[in-house]
Image (tube, rainbow, N blue to C red; front, side, top):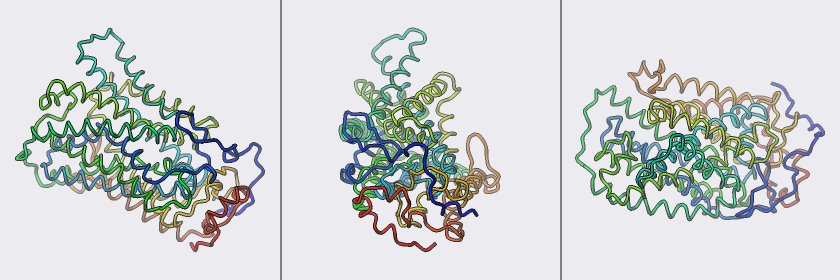
Length: 511
């Protein structure tokens, strides 16, 4: 292993992003900060604000669909409800990831340099983040477009040929405009979005419970197939919380001395509550209607006046979810090394997602089948990534030097060995491979899953292998020592208030 991490940083040719002049974070103004460090003088807010941010992004139609998918897998009512709860326990880990935001003052894509290195994070942090973000942007645009087209049909409007593409473009534009404005605007609007969407789902719950068949029994499955469907259902449910390895993005403006427990709690609760409630509604609806295409079959159990409301809710909830997805995807794109503003990266990645979403909606043979296969495969990457992130927080005791994390120069504290931290890269490669071999999807069955009678263990073994291997390699690799435990040239230039808030980071952490 190289000892490049201990070199003095070279003189930069251009100012690092962290050296930009501080700008106010105000609602209605385009946020100027991106993947850089937020100085202490600009930290504000309270942890409970995170609840509304995550709530507004997760009162969404996708969870209703996922609940219905569990019933389509042939699970019983109570099995599907149990899987809904167990799969969403991953929100506790999302809450843990969020505490790295106030500690570092940086988004998750910058924190990931600690576990993969400056160059390594461009592949396993920023690269995967952009791919995952665009994937979920596509899902949201597709759901919103299909619902918007159905809503237009409800009012008897006949669109001319090709006009459906215009609907898709309008939906996409609405999806990304708030993400362009950024952090403060998201905080301001989140409670209103949450309240409006919650009211619609409460009314929907009345109709769903009124039509529910609590004596519902699925067609019996063979024992091996039954276990395979249970594990597949768990993987599909877990894919949603596992996709949010971006908790620091929305917590990084909080003061450094904020309660870590409160940050973790409000973040996790904001995602867990709507996921459980809406997922449960999808499961129960699956006892009364065919959930293959719920935006159409829902008309069987709700009055005529509510169908347009339901479709409008799908459009709005997809847009609100895309607000956070687009925001984080823009930050990830900056982590690739793109020297453009965060607002610009939101627009660029949004345009890519919009183009691909057009194929999903209008050209793909079956949107639901494509969605299911994508969610099943996403877990093989998302699980290991989130697990490594969480273990790194525990190993470093959440001590992250934000100024050092945003220093991408050769020889900087997180440069490691030629820009790569091999324990993180090795753990990611091994765990993702094992998870892929353990997956049982509609596209293929891995050899490990096949040997186990079709049991899909990807959502379990991937995170366990990744976290365990990373911890072993991190603790046994020499001559590495925790770079966040020692001051660097980049941190000495920070304000004295930042230094005072980070005194404990100067303590040596044994490795």
